Image 1 (cartoon, rainbow, N blue to C red):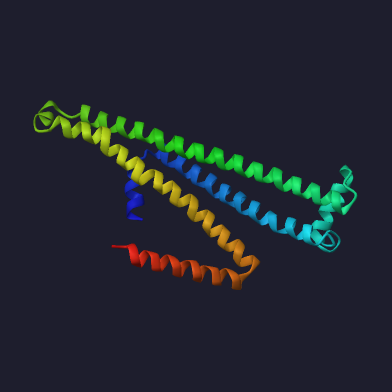
Image 2 (cartoon, rainbow, N blue to C red; image 1 turned 90 degrees about the horizontal axis):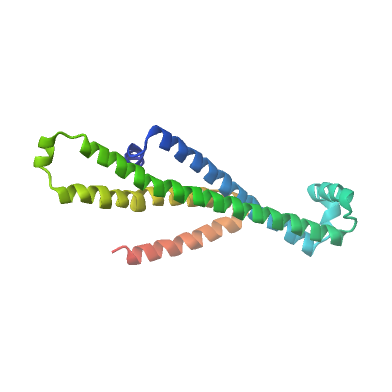
Length: 202
């Protein structure tokens, strides 16, 4: 939390609001991704057992709605259902691409704006201040250290938020599908990760 506060210190209030909007878009992106994964389960169920179209409440209602556009048989509904999922996955990937592009653009432009503010701070210093400063250090701060903030702090922050939200929603989805299997997988993967981390941490 302390590191996040330090990171927000480099952003203006307007930039902080934009960052908040991007995080909200990230949440929506993760939710759409999760729904895309969840939509595959009923589609596979329909393929293996077409009778679900008549017994499942949601599928039955969707079949009745699709009959208004000429889908009259279970085979036609299977193709139609697969087409809907395909369109949804295309939409999901498109939204993910737009969100990722806006994130990268935001992070890249912060290198420009932060460097500009640092330079303005230096320019506004009295002449006597420059007499005691090393010009190479000033240039390093503007050109190099700002880049480190962007590449090693701000960009990883967005990656961390994005993958944490997505992982949390996928875990919730897996728990809703099969709690026992999810816990077993979590224990196995967590144990493997712990062993690898313990072995390589030095």
